[in-house]
Amino acid sequence: MTRLVLASASPRRLALLAQIGITPDDVIAADIDETPLKDETPRNLALRLARQKAEAVKADGAVVLAADTVVAVGRRVLPKAETEAEARECLRLLSGRSHRVYTGVAVRTAGLEIRTRLVETRVAFKVLSAAEVEAYIASNEWRGKAGGYAAQGLAGRYITSIIGSYSSVIGLPLYETANLIESARS
Image 1: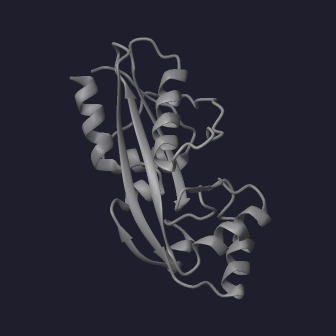
Image 2: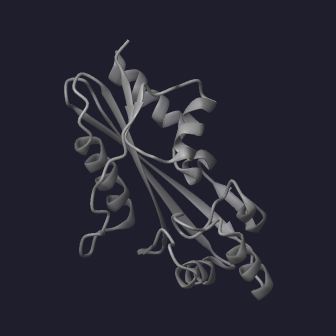
């Protein structure tokens, strides 16, 4: 069977793959500039970054799997929060409203063909109190997370509904990913 390389250092993506019985032969984090282009939509950003990550990883003869998750309120892309101020701003924007999570998945075949899928999921948050925001900030769970939250963690208590793929919100839509890998290996 063709080797599989995961182009991500995300422990969540590795755990999600394990959940469906897939273990990559190697993990090589792609190092690309993730800055959105001028006027780039959130959905196009997620697909472009996934594709660039798949292209950036050097692994001759292997299938390369890459993904990128973008959280957006309207056309506004929320950052992967690195500071408390960024996380607070994300939570302020998410409080009491719905937003979209876009996960782009790209698989590069051993023959260097790139195949992509985009999964869009709608997530709604309850209205967050100041105490809830501060408790979440104190948890540090938000650090480095798209949109400043982790649905699989403490922030799960703030989510009132998810329409679409829960695993995509965590970082990897399992159904689409499994199908892309299977087709790339055949």
